[in-house]
Image 1 (cartoon, rainbow over the protein chains, first blue to last red):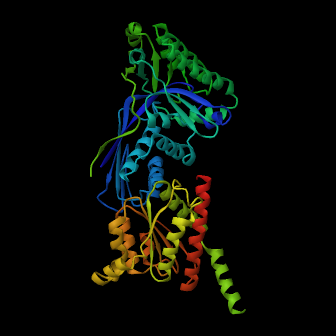
Image 2: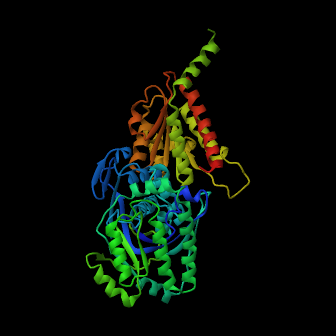
Image 3: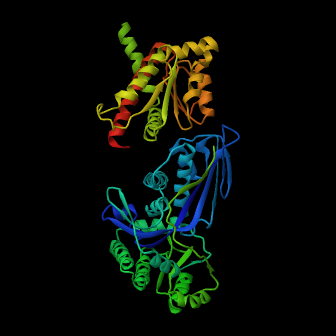
Amino acid sequence: MIISKTPFRVSFCGGGTDLRAYYSRRQGSVVSTAINKFMYIAVKDYFEKDKIFLKYSRTELVTNVEKIKHPIIREALKLTGILRGVEISSMADIPSATGLGSSSAFTVGLLNALHAYLDEHKSPEDLAREACKIEIEILKEPIGKQDQYISAYGGLRHILFNPDESVNTELIIIPRSLKEELEDSLLLFYTGIKRKARDILHEQRKNTEKKMEFLDKMRELSFELKESLMKKDLTRFGELLHKNWEYKKMLASKITNPLIERYYNLALKHGALGGKILGAGGGGFLLLYCEHKKQNSVIKALKSLKLVPFRFESHGSVIVYRDG
Amino acid sequence: MDFTSEYFEELKKIFDNIDKKSIEEITDIIYKAYVNDRTIFILGNGGSASTASHFACDLGKGTLSRVYDHNEKRFRVVSLTDNVAVLTAYANDLSFDDIFLQQLRNLVHRGDVVIAITGSGNSKNVIKAVKYARDCGAITIGLLGFDGGKVKKFLDKYVIVPSNHYGRIEDVHLILEHMITDYLRRKIKGGR
């Protein structure tokens, strides 16, 4: 049996410039980090050699790989050439459809586990590329490429998306003390709203041309955000996060809503400097930057929301168990 | 119509009716095996045995664009029809039905690709080998004729040469082998 462990992510700045509609014209740029919330995928031989058994939020028992309903599992099995005799199950620290990049973490972790099952080692680059191929090219999801890369590579990174489809992932190296201070200054709240990223992203992708100026701004902000870390200026980091959110809201109509606005404004009033809804928007997780000493007041103000503590994660997708 | 024209007409009819999509899908499976360093095994009897050897030669050498470049990525490909000592040893000691299966036991691994070339689709040694390969988690492919025969149901992908004549079927198998090799060479150059 093989078990892979793949981190979710929190993206800070530049999301949307990782869509092909943007980076095919201008190099996309995001700053994002893997976090210590994980997707676990287990792969093992199945008792019946001619069948495939799947356990996720549903179960499936099929005789033909083409009959698998779960689109990512179906395509990952076809891509790796595992056509029968296998059992796959998945577990995660965070529910899906909440904006922490779970679907790409799932794809990357599944590919990592399937290759390990075939005694193959794949680099983070290979895993990210294969995951993008499945999600974007084959399944036509209207998503960008940042989630696959950060899940595969791990760490706090500045990721650049080139028009020729190549991707540069650069670790942002900061002192441990600064990293810890940054971690301590970030609050993650679950709004309790599960959303379908697809509708928002479809609108956003359609809007890309009209919204180029906002995306250009967000791209610039991602460079400034990285710069703020280099200069150890976390206050600036918080302010940039706020600016980014102001632009992000312009990209599609459902990224924010009155409830989210209320929570966000409440947080600012109580001392947060900035923040954003993670992922596509419309619900899921709210990230806030708030100095440690003002956090109690913000947490109290948002007491109807579940606070989810987290740290940055330096490892990307790894195989944590294998026998035989 | 004279004999030669008739022969060519027959071949033409085959080409008009062959399932071209399945040839593409088979090529894609072989290409993925190449990308992931999986091994490709080829087997068959009689004329198909010689096509198996020929195919292995073409995949192994014919796909190279820089023979003297030690770094050029190559196919891992083996024809199970070439070692007379092994073939006769298993045929003599066990049975002719085991000559391919036993060789696979030494070598086949999950994710590998096994290509069976058979006109009838009913050769016992081919069926046994294909079934075994399936149980090991290998991908099974067939170049077939007639109605595909009994082996068909154990194959993940196959192409049937639509003819009931062994000679024509074997002709076309050889053409398919060359076509797939050429197609792969192009895919490798294009990097996809």
